[in-house]
Length: 207
Ligand SMILES: Cc1cc2nc3c(=O)[nH]c(=O)nc-3n(C[C@H](O)[C@H](O)[C@H](O)COP(=O)(O)O)c2cc1C
Image (cartoon, rainbow, N blue to C red; front, side, top):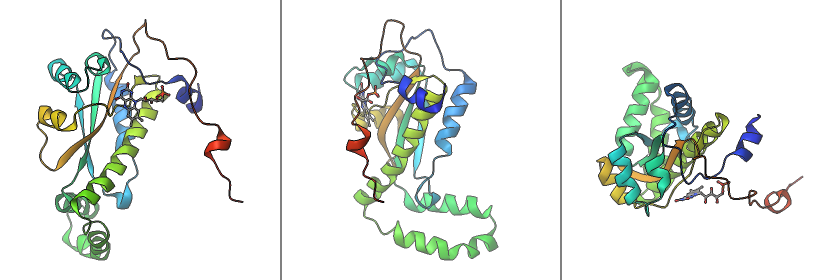
């Protein structure tokens, strides 16, 4: 099947078959798609948790209106935004420069520009900015799963503070959105045809 037909095949799965697990090879592909996400300035202000521990999944489910996608998922990917701009910025430029001080010095103009453009945001604006990047990663993960015919469900219906506490997140990481993945339970069927606005309603061509 093509990428587009896989996007049509996928749906927000409510219950996974607990006897079927996503293989390490397929998980690796999904995580690699997430890792390859483009970000503003390349800064990658996010971190991801891949939860397979059943007890923790069950506790997260309890903090998510008891939605069964979480407890029944093969893997639960938790998307968080990083808000520690200084540390993240430093990590990024160390990576870019390969730890070489001379190379890093040559990148100073770019670094200063980035500090000016991004580092000057207040905390709330910075979190919003970082969250946008994390949601792109979430879309990449969801699409990569569909491409492998692995089911998933985008999920925002949970208490982000409670989930952050369950995972022991540092104060610099904020839980945003979940992506449980697995294989749809046999008895579950997609809820009829997809509901999407028409192309005419969604796209305006400016020629
Ligand atoms: C950001 C986001 C958050 C969502 N949160 C939930 C959720 O908490 N629980 C749920 O069952 N579905 C959730 N959904 C799934 C949507 O309801 C679903 O994607 C939408 O109705 C379109 O249907 P489809 O994904 O089956 O094509 C979420 C989707 C997105 C994109």
